[in-house]
Structure formats: structure tokens, C-alpha cells
Length: 377
Image (cartoon, rainbow, N blue to C red; front, side):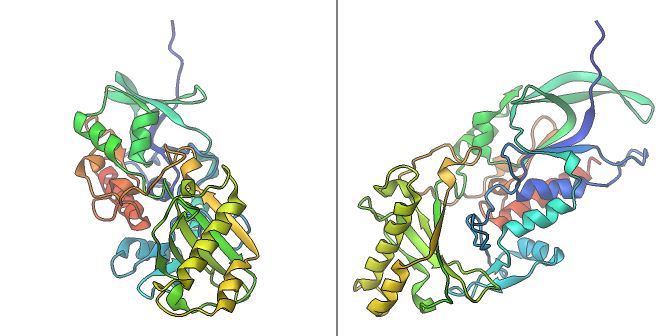
């Protein structure tokens, strides 16, 4: 029987969030070191229907962040440098002068990078379900046949993709649950992946939109709460107002949605519970300053609300009904280590060794993997 010919890629990137897109950006258009003068052959597969991972704006087109949002320029030089290199403007977070946000929302990063990449090399709605190391095969590279181990990736659709190297740029916990590796990954790697926490996966964000300029003092909009099961799901609130529209303002809450007694997916009730909790906080003796009743009533009279239930997002979370928030991920060297003699590489923010979980970590992990690839191609 004659074996079917197949396309052999140099690198396949699994995951189309910020980290995976940065790796693809590096691969795009660079030439191999093997004197063939051929561009590296790469593809990117994203499990979800859209690119961006945990970066997303509100559904109302107001450019309000519903995922990752902040940059602390003094502590996060890599994401700051990336934003500047893409020509994206930032503005100071109104109620936290040490941090900035991205004009247009953090998803603007994804949009800018994606426009630089050929769309035919990116495939969404394409979960990878198996990763297998094929026995050494004879390849024809620059007319010099050689033996090389090849990786076979199986997609949920049944399609098989073959490649020399794979960059996994997705939450490690999800990789451990959704992808079968053969041969198995090292015990230390598997343990680290299973125990890792996917930042934001348990958080539901609620944005309240006001069709008016900001009417509240900034000293009250950055607050931390104690969530409770009696319809008090929020644990933090901040000024989420977008830049560039003085006629619109926004408050954004971090919540544990399961602590609200609202019916499942009842976003309107969840939003109401958040503002009622905030009003109660402002009226209590624990409030940092006295807030007039008229301001509290204005908070309750929001014009629209937008809810992003990250726990219910496929390929983001494994727990639809979390009862609490996981601790922020800590650096773990095993998550960053390559496998299969360097043919499997791992990006994604949770694998970063300096700032895991945040956008700085996504950039840092991509830079680490790009450096690893430079030694190969």
C-alpha cells in the first residue's frame, strides 16, 4: 500500500490568544537557517470561534474590557513595549494612577497582530485532541533526505496535521484535560499542568454602562468587597470607562456569579445584584467617604449592562459554577519546559516565569518560546 502524501509543517501553533499570535507573528515570513532560503512553513489552530483568548470587549461596541485590561508600565515592560510598537494608545486608569489601559480595549492588541498575519494560515474552531510522536520518517529537505521524528496532531474534526515542532499556547490545565499525548509527557510536566490555575477562568465580569459622563468621585470606584451567598457576588469594582467618549462611563465588577441567586444565565439579575451590593457598600460605615443618596440612586439607574461569564467559556474554564476565586498563578518552571527533545514548546501566560496569568506573562512566554525557536530555525 502506498502511503498518502501529507503536508509537513515546520511549526504548528496551538492557541490563538495573545501569546500564540505573537509566536505566529515571529514565524511569519522568516527564512529557515538550512540555506534553503525558504520561509518557515507554519499554521495556527484555535479551538474557539474567535481569536484573542481571554481578551474581549463588551458586546455593545462601547470598547469596555470584559477580559484582561490593565498594564502596570513600571512592572510590566514587555507588554508596554509591545503596545507602543503596535502604535496603540494607552490612558491612565482613572482610579489607579499606577496602571494604564489600552484605548479601544485590550482586544485591540489581537486585532492589530492578526491583521499582520495571512488569514489562510489561521484556522479557528479547530480543537486539537491528540498529539503523537511518529517514528522517525524520511523527509526531503533541500534535496537532502534525512531521518526526522515527526509530530502528528489530530483535530476534533478528524483531520491530521504533521509538523516538526508544536508550540502550545493555551492554558496548561486545559491541555492536560483535552489533549492525549503519546508518548506521555514527563511526570513533572503533567503534575504541573494538572495543578495549574487558569487566571480569569472563574471570574464573571459585569459592566454597567451609563450614557453620561462620570458622575462619581474616583475615590469610591476602586473598591474590594467581601462576596457573600446572599446575592452579593462581587469582590471588586473599578472604573471601566472607555477613552474617547466623554458622554459614556462604565463601572466594571469582578464577580463569582454562582453566589448570586439569580437563575442560570440571568444576566440582568446578576447586574442588579452587583449594583445593589455596591450601593450597600457605599451606604455602610465602611465606605471610605460619604456618598450622597442622589449619587447612589444614579448608580442604580444604569442604561445597559454587559456580562461575560468566563467560567462557561469552552477552552477557557473547566468549572461552570465556581464558588470562589482561584489564587493568582505562581511561576512554575515545569510549565515552561519543552518536551520530546525540544519538539514540543509551551507558551501561554500561565507558563511565564515572571508574570504568569496577566498580559505581561503572555508576552513574556511568547518571547521565551521565540528565543527557543531561533536556535532551531
